[in-house]
Image (tube, rainbow, N blue to C red; front, top):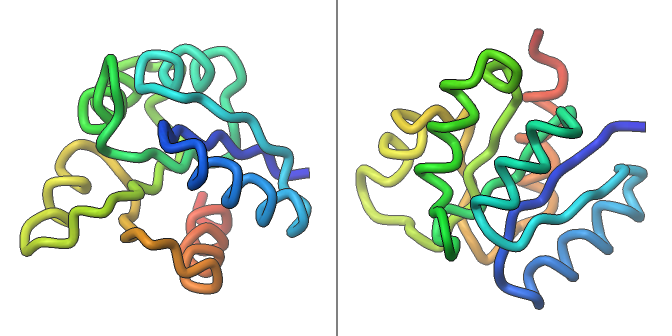
Length: 122
């Protein structure tokens, strides 16, 4: 079973996404802020991280950079999830170390396609 860490502070988004992805067969873990996300990703080394960028305690940009700087988590696959859809936001996410970028509200079919693409990459 593919392990997935969802780092999301909004309870409604977190619950909706985790329920829908569990039904698709993913093993889901959830972190509610960037610091917890870094700690959980380091401990569990999931197959994929869905990282909200606007998080309390430590934002997703910082959390992603920390994961990339740590040799134990540097190769994790990370998809940025953000309501920021302005020009340059995708580039900012990629520069922080994300492997891909998706906007909110989540289009599950589109997100699943991006997740599959990342999981197939070696």
